[in-house]
Image (tube, rainbow, N blue to C red):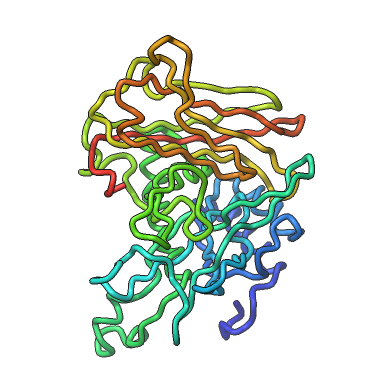
Amino acid sequence: MNESNAAPVREGDLLAAVDKAVADGVDVVNMSFGGGGCEGYLGNFPSNDHFRAATDAGILFLASTGNGGSYSSNVCNISHPAYLPTVIGVNGLDTRNVASGYNSLIMADSPGFVASSRGRVPLRTFLGTVGSTAGPDLAAPACQSDLASLGPDQYEPFATLVCGTSIASPITTGIAANMKQALKAIWNTTDPRILQVVLLVNGDTSNGYQSPSDMRTATSMYTGYGRVRGHFPGDSTMAAPWAWGARSFKIYNGQTVSWPVGDSGPESYSVTQWKWALTWAETSLDGVADIDISVWNTCPPGGTPVQIAGQSDYDIRNRIHLRASEIGGKCLEMRAYGYNVPPEGRVVYSSDYFHSGDPEQH
Protein backbone atom coordinates (compact mmCIF):
# COMPACT_ATOMS: atom_id res chain seq x y z
CA MET A 1 0.00 0.00 0.00
CA ASN A 2 1.13 3.57 -0.54
CA GLU A 3 0.77 6.40 1.96
CA SER A 4 -2.89 6.90 1.03
CA ASN A 5 -3.65 3.17 1.44
CA ALA A 6 -5.12 3.22 -2.05
CA ALA A 7 -2.56 1.73 -4.43
CA PRO A 8 -2.10 -2.02 -4.91
CA VAL A 9 0.95 -3.76 -3.53
CA ARG A 10 3.69 -3.81 -6.18
CA GLU A 11 6.12 -6.69 -6.56
CA GLY A 12 9.17 -4.47 -6.10
CA ASP A 13 7.79 -3.05 -2.85
CA LEU A 14 7.06 -6.56 -1.61
CA LEU A 15 10.62 -7.69 -2.36
CA ALA A 16 12.00 -4.71 -0.48
CA ALA A 17 9.74 -5.41 2.50
CA VAL A 18 10.83 -9.05 2.66
CA ASP A 19 14.49 -8.01 2.52
CA LYS A 20 13.91 -5.48 5.28
CA ALA A 21 12.26 -8.12 7.48
CA VAL A 22 15.30 -10.36 7.07
CA ALA A 23 17.69 -7.51 7.83
CA ASP A 24 15.74 -6.58 10.98
CA GLY A 25 15.69 -10.15 12.29
CA VAL A 26 11.90 -10.43 12.25
CA ASP A 27 10.48 -13.79 13.42
CA VAL A 28 6.87 -13.79 12.17
CA VAL A 29 5.29 -11.63 9.45
CA ASN A 30 1.61 -11.01 8.73
CA MET A 31 0.60 -9.92 5.22
CA SER A 32 -3.00 -8.71 5.02
CA PHE A 33 -2.81 -8.11 1.29
CA GLY A 34 -2.51 -10.06 -1.93
CA GLY A 35 -2.82 -9.94 -5.68
CA GLY A 36 -3.60 -12.01 -8.71
CA GLY A 37 -5.93 -14.96 -8.49
CA CYS A 38 -5.04 -18.63 -8.18
CA GLU A 39 -2.22 -18.68 -10.76
CA GLY A 40 -0.49 -21.54 -8.97
CA TYR A 41 2.33 -23.04 -11.02
CA LEU A 42 1.49 -20.68 -13.90
CA GLY A 43 2.50 -17.64 -11.84
CA ASN A 44 6.22 -16.88 -12.00
CA PHE A 45 6.53 -14.18 -9.33
CA PRO A 46 10.05 -12.90 -8.48
CA SER A 47 9.00 -12.79 -4.81
CA ASN A 48 8.72 -16.60 -4.68
CA ASP A 49 12.51 -16.92 -4.36
CA HIS A 50 12.56 -14.09 -1.82
CA PHE A 51 10.04 -15.85 0.41
CA ARG A 52 12.05 -19.06 0.21
CA ALA A 53 15.29 -17.27 1.14
CA ALA A 54 13.60 -15.37 3.98
CA THR A 55 12.11 -18.60 5.32
CA ASP A 56 15.59 -20.13 5.22
CA ALA A 57 16.73 -17.08 7.24
CA GLY A 58 14.19 -17.86 9.97
CA ILE A 59 10.96 -15.98 9.15
CA LEU A 60 7.47 -17.51 9.16
CA PHE A 61 5.08 -15.76 6.77
CA LEU A 62 1.28 -15.69 7.03
CA ALA A 63 -1.07 -14.02 4.55
CA SER A 64 -4.76 -13.33 4.07
CA THR A 65 -6.27 -15.37 1.24
CA GLY A 66 -8.59 -12.66 -0.09
CA ASN A 67 -12.31 -11.95 -0.08
CA GLY A 68 -13.27 -12.80 -3.65
CA GLY A 69 -15.12 -16.05 -3.05
CA SER A 70 -18.73 -16.87 -3.73
CA TYR A 71 -21.26 -18.98 -1.86
CA SER A 72 -22.58 -20.30 -5.17
CA SER A 73 -19.23 -20.93 -6.84
CA ASN A 74 -16.14 -22.93 -6.01
CA VAL A 75 -13.91 -21.31 -8.60
CA CYS A 76 -10.39 -20.96 -7.23
CA ASN A 77 -9.50 -17.30 -6.60
CA ILE A 78 -7.08 -17.27 -3.67
CA SER A 79 -4.50 -14.51 -4.01
CA HIS A 80 -0.70 -14.54 -4.13
CA PRO A 81 1.35 -14.87 -1.91
CA ALA A 82 -1.07 -16.74 0.41
CA TYR A 83 -0.93 -19.98 -1.59
CA LEU A 84 2.86 -20.26 -1.71
CA PRO A 85 4.46 -23.28 0.03
CA THR A 86 6.51 -20.94 2.24
CA VAL A 87 3.43 -18.99 3.39
CA ILE A 88 0.50 -19.97 5.62
CA GLY A 89 -2.66 -18.78 3.88
CA VAL A 90 -5.47 -17.82 6.30
CA ASN A 91 -9.14 -17.80 5.30
CA GLY A 92 -11.95 -16.09 7.21
CA LEU A 93 -14.73 -17.49 9.38
CA ASP A 94 -18.09 -15.80 9.77
CA THR A 95 -18.21 -14.44 13.32
CA ARG A 96 -21.12 -12.03 12.93
CA ASN A 97 -23.64 -14.02 14.94
CA VAL A 98 -22.41 -15.56 18.19
CA ALA A 99 -25.63 -17.54 18.61
CA SER A 100 -25.50 -19.15 15.18
CA GLY A 101 -22.38 -20.95 14.01
CA TYR A 102 -20.00 -18.54 15.72
CA ASN A 103 -16.45 -19.13 14.53
CA SER A 104 -17.64 -22.14 12.58
CA LEU A 105 -18.61 -21.36 9.00
CA ILE A 106 -16.56 -19.94 6.19
CA MET A 107 -17.47 -16.41 5.08
CA ALA A 108 -20.04 -16.66 2.29
CA ASP A 109 -21.25 -13.77 0.19
CA SER A 110 -24.55 -12.13 1.00
CA PRO A 111 -25.84 -8.59 0.38
CA GLY A 112 -23.21 -6.16 1.65
CA PHE A 113 -20.86 -8.90 2.83
CA VAL A 114 -17.68 -10.38 1.42
CA ALA A 115 -16.76 -14.03 1.05
CA SER A 116 -13.50 -15.86 1.73
CA SER A 117 -11.56 -16.90 -1.33
CA ARG A 118 -11.76 -20.47 -2.56
CA GLY A 119 -8.79 -22.72 -3.12
CA ARG A 120 -7.64 -25.77 -5.06
CA VAL A 121 -4.62 -24.05 -6.55
CA PRO A 122 -3.05 -25.76 -9.58
CA LEU A 123 0.38 -27.29 -9.06
CA ARG A 124 2.70 -29.32 -11.29
CA THR A 125 5.05 -32.06 -10.17
CA PHE A 126 8.62 -32.25 -11.40
CA LEU A 127 7.47 -35.01 -13.80
CA GLY A 128 4.81 -32.72 -15.26
CA THR A 129 1.72 -34.17 -13.60
CA VAL A 130 -0.85 -31.48 -12.84
CA GLY A 131 -2.67 -31.58 -9.50
CA SER A 132 -3.78 -29.07 -6.91
CA THR A 133 -3.18 -27.90 -3.37
CA ALA A 134 -5.83 -26.51 -1.04
CA GLY A 135 -4.36 -22.99 -0.97
CA PRO A 136 -5.89 -21.88 2.32
CA ASP A 137 -4.00 -23.55 5.18
CA LEU A 138 -6.03 -22.45 8.20
CA ALA A 139 -9.11 -20.39 9.03
CA ALA A 140 -9.73 -17.87 11.82
CA PRO A 141 -12.38 -15.35 12.95
CA ALA A 142 -12.81 -12.63 10.32
CA CYS A 143 -15.23 -10.08 11.80
CA GLN A 144 -14.59 -7.30 14.31
CA SER A 145 -17.83 -8.14 16.05
CA ASP A 146 -16.63 -7.49 19.60
CA LEU A 147 -15.17 -4.10 18.73
CA ALA A 148 -18.26 -3.14 16.77
CA SER A 149 -20.51 -3.90 19.73
CA LEU A 150 -18.67 -1.38 21.92
CA GLY A 151 -20.12 1.54 20.00
CA PRO A 152 -18.67 4.66 18.35
CA ASP A 153 -17.96 6.44 21.64
CA GLN A 154 -15.35 3.81 22.52
CA TYR A 155 -14.03 2.54 19.18
CA GLU A 156 -15.22 4.94 16.52
CA PRO A 157 -13.33 3.35 13.59
CA PHE A 158 -15.17 0.08 14.24
CA ALA A 159 -18.70 1.40 14.70
CA THR A 160 -19.58 -0.32 11.42
CA LEU A 161 -19.02 -4.07 11.37
CA VAL A 162 -15.98 -4.98 9.28
CA CYS A 163 -15.21 -8.48 8.04
CA GLY A 164 -12.43 -9.91 5.90
CA THR A 165 -9.52 -12.32 5.75
CA SER A 166 -7.25 -9.37 6.59
CA ILE A 167 -8.60 -9.74 10.13
CA ALA A 168 -8.23 -13.53 10.24
CA SER A 169 -4.57 -13.48 9.23
CA PRO A 170 -3.19 -11.31 12.09
CA ILE A 171 -5.19 -13.35 14.61
CA THR A 172 -3.39 -16.46 13.38
CA THR A 173 -0.09 -14.58 13.33
CA GLY A 174 -0.49 -13.81 17.03
CA ILE A 175 -1.01 -17.51 17.76
CA ALA A 176 2.06 -18.29 15.65
CA ALA A 177 4.21 -15.84 17.62
CA ASN A 178 3.19 -17.45 20.91
CA MET A 179 3.89 -20.91 19.54
CA LYS A 180 7.31 -19.81 18.35
CA GLN A 181 8.19 -18.91 21.93
CA ALA A 182 6.91 -22.29 23.12
CA LEU A 183 8.93 -24.15 20.46
CA LYS A 184 12.08 -22.35 21.54
CA ALA A 185 11.48 -23.13 25.20
CA ILE A 186 10.29 -26.74 24.85
CA TRP A 187 12.16 -28.08 21.82
CA ASN A 188 14.96 -25.51 21.56
CA THR A 189 14.16 -24.76 17.92
CA THR A 190 13.22 -21.61 16.02
CA ASP A 191 12.92 -23.30 12.61
CA PRO A 192 9.99 -21.56 10.87
CA ARG A 193 9.10 -24.71 8.92
CA ILE A 194 8.72 -26.70 12.14
CA LEU A 195 6.55 -23.86 13.45
CA GLN A 196 4.57 -23.98 10.21
CA VAL A 197 3.76 -27.66 10.48
CA VAL A 198 2.94 -27.38 14.21
CA LEU A 199 0.43 -24.68 13.32
CA LEU A 200 -1.03 -26.87 10.59
CA VAL A 201 -1.52 -29.90 12.84
CA ASN A 202 -3.37 -27.59 15.23
CA GLY A 203 -6.13 -27.11 12.65
CA ASP A 204 -9.33 -28.60 14.04
CA THR A 205 -10.29 -30.56 10.86
CA SER A 206 -13.40 -28.46 10.21
CA ASN A 207 -13.95 -27.63 6.55
CA GLY A 208 -15.77 -24.45 7.53
CA TYR A 209 -18.64 -25.22 5.19
CA GLN A 210 -20.49 -28.02 6.94
CA SER A 211 -20.76 -28.03 10.69
CA PRO A 212 -19.59 -30.25 12.16
CA SER A 213 -17.05 -31.69 9.72
CA ASP A 214 -14.31 -34.24 10.25
CA MET A 215 -11.68 -34.12 7.51
CA ARG A 216 -9.69 -37.26 8.16
CA THR A 217 -7.33 -37.01 5.19
CA ALA A 218 -6.44 -34.31 2.66
CA THR A 219 -7.18 -30.60 3.15
CA SER A 220 -10.16 -28.34 2.46
CA MET A 221 -10.36 -25.77 -0.32
CA TYR A 222 -12.06 -23.49 2.22
CA THR A 223 -10.09 -23.94 5.44
CA GLY A 224 -7.04 -26.09 4.69
CA TYR A 225 -6.38 -27.94 7.95
CA GLY A 226 -9.37 -26.29 9.68
CA ARG A 227 -9.94 -23.61 12.31
CA VAL A 228 -6.71 -22.53 13.98
CA ARG A 229 -6.15 -23.74 17.54
CA GLY A 230 -3.36 -22.97 19.98
CA HIS A 231 -2.98 -26.15 22.03
CA PHE A 232 0.81 -26.51 21.82
CA PRO A 233 2.53 -27.35 24.12
CA GLY A 234 -0.49 -28.18 26.30
CA ASP A 235 -3.70 -26.90 27.86
CA SER A 236 -6.73 -28.12 29.80
CA THR A 237 -8.11 -29.97 26.76
CA MET A 238 -4.98 -32.15 26.50
CA ALA A 239 -6.18 -34.87 28.87
CA ALA A 240 -3.53 -37.51 29.67
CA PRO A 241 -2.17 -39.55 28.11
CA TRP A 242 -1.08 -37.03 25.52
CA ALA A 243 2.10 -36.20 23.63
CA TRP A 244 3.52 -34.00 20.87
CA GLY A 245 6.14 -34.79 18.27
CA ALA A 246 7.90 -32.96 15.42
CA ARG A 247 10.77 -33.83 13.15
CA SER A 248 12.43 -33.06 9.83
CA PHE A 249 14.16 -35.46 7.47
CA LYS A 250 15.33 -35.69 3.89
CA ILE A 251 13.59 -38.07 1.53
CA TYR A 252 14.58 -39.29 -1.94
CA ASN A 253 12.71 -40.87 -4.81
CA GLY A 254 11.48 -44.37 -4.00
CA GLN A 255 12.50 -44.09 -0.34
CA THR A 256 10.23 -44.87 2.63
CA VAL A 257 10.91 -43.12 5.94
CA SER A 258 9.05 -44.55 8.93
CA TRP A 259 8.88 -44.09 12.70
CA PRO A 260 6.54 -45.17 15.50
CA VAL A 261 3.95 -43.03 17.25
CA GLY A 262 5.43 -42.71 20.73
CA ASP A 263 7.10 -46.00 21.63
CA SER A 264 6.65 -49.10 19.50
CA GLY A 265 4.08 -50.71 21.81
CA PRO A 266 0.26 -50.66 21.55
CA GLU A 267 -1.46 -47.33 22.14
CA SER A 268 -3.67 -46.74 25.17
CA TYR A 269 -7.41 -47.26 24.77
CA SER A 270 -7.81 -43.91 26.57
CA VAL A 271 -6.53 -41.98 23.56
CA THR A 272 -9.44 -40.32 21.76
CA GLN A 273 -7.70 -38.66 18.80
CA TRP A 274 -4.42 -38.60 16.87
CA LYS A 275 -3.51 -35.98 14.28
CA TRP A 276 -0.61 -35.76 11.84
CA ALA A 277 0.44 -32.98 9.46
CA LEU A 278 3.30 -33.09 6.98
CA THR A 279 4.70 -30.70 4.38
CA TRP A 280 8.01 -30.12 2.62
CA ALA A 281 10.18 -27.32 1.32
CA GLU A 282 9.26 -26.00 -2.13
CA THR A 283 9.86 -22.56 -3.62
CA SER A 284 6.82 -22.46 -5.89
CA LEU A 285 4.05 -24.76 -7.10
CA ASP A 286 5.95 -25.81 -10.22
CA GLY A 287 8.26 -28.84 -10.19
CA VAL A 288 7.11 -30.05 -6.77
CA ALA A 289 7.76 -33.46 -5.26
CA ASP A 290 5.00 -36.03 -4.77
CA ILE A 291 5.21 -37.59 -1.30
CA ASP A 292 2.58 -40.00 0.04
CA ILE A 293 1.85 -40.65 3.70
CA SER A 294 0.20 -43.52 5.56
CA VAL A 295 -0.31 -44.91 9.08
CA TRP A 296 0.05 -48.61 9.81
CA ASN A 297 -0.73 -50.98 12.65
CA THR A 298 2.44 -53.05 13.04
CA CYS A 299 1.10 -55.46 15.66
CA PRO A 300 -2.26 -56.75 14.38
CA PRO A 301 -3.48 -60.32 14.93
CA GLY A 302 -1.40 -62.50 12.63
CA GLY A 303 1.57 -60.14 12.69
CA THR A 304 1.39 -58.71 9.15
CA PRO A 305 1.25 -54.86 9.25
CA VAL A 306 -2.08 -53.36 8.18
CA GLN A 307 -2.60 -49.89 6.75
CA ILE A 308 -5.11 -47.84 8.74
CA ALA A 309 -5.20 -44.65 6.65
CA GLY A 310 -3.27 -42.90 3.90
CA GLN A 311 -3.12 -39.86 1.64
CA SER A 312 -1.66 -39.93 -1.86
CA ASP A 313 -2.99 -36.72 -3.45
CA TYR A 314 -0.76 -34.51 -5.57
CA ASP A 315 -0.36 -31.94 -2.83
CA ILE A 316 2.34 -30.28 -0.73
CA ARG A 317 0.20 -30.34 2.43
CA ASN A 318 -0.71 -33.75 3.84
CA ARG A 319 -2.71 -34.83 6.86
CA ILE A 320 -4.12 -37.92 8.56
CA HIS A 321 -6.52 -37.84 11.50
CA LEU A 322 -7.43 -41.02 13.42
CA ARG A 323 -10.38 -41.62 15.73
CA ALA A 324 -10.31 -43.55 19.00
CA SER A 325 -11.45 -46.82 17.37
CA GLU A 326 -8.39 -46.73 15.09
CA ILE A 327 -5.87 -46.05 17.87
CA GLY A 328 -6.40 -48.12 21.02
CA GLY A 329 -4.44 -51.39 21.19
CA LYS A 330 -2.63 -50.71 17.90
CA CYS A 331 1.09 -50.16 17.31
CA LEU A 332 0.98 -47.08 15.11
CA GLU A 333 3.74 -46.40 12.60
CA MET A 334 3.94 -43.30 10.40
CA ARG A 335 5.30 -43.72 6.87
CA ALA A 336 6.32 -41.16 4.24
CA TYR A 337 7.04 -42.47 0.74
CA GLY A 338 8.88 -40.53 -1.97
CA TYR A 339 6.61 -41.42 -4.87
CA ASN A 340 8.11 -38.91 -7.30
CA VAL A 341 10.92 -36.82 -5.84
CA PRO A 342 13.57 -34.84 -7.76
CA PRO A 343 17.11 -36.26 -7.62
CA GLU A 344 18.25 -33.72 -5.02
CA GLY A 345 15.56 -34.95 -2.62
CA ARG A 346 13.28 -32.90 -0.40
CA VAL A 347 13.43 -31.89 3.27
CA VAL A 348 10.16 -32.95 4.93
CA TYR A 349 8.63 -31.41 8.09
CA SER A 350 6.26 -33.43 10.23
CA SER A 351 4.27 -32.86 13.43
CA ASP A 352 1.74 -35.00 15.24
CA TYR A 353 -0.01 -35.22 18.58
CA PHE A 354 -2.47 -37.43 20.41
CA HIS A 355 -4.62 -36.78 23.46
CA SER A 356 -7.36 -38.32 25.60
CA GLY A 357 -9.64 -35.29 25.84
CA ASP A 358 -12.71 -34.17 23.92
CA PRO A 359 -12.01 -34.32 20.15
CA GLU A 360 -14.47 -31.48 19.62
CA GLN A 361 -11.94 -29.18 21.32
CA HIS A 362 -9.26 -30.07 18.78
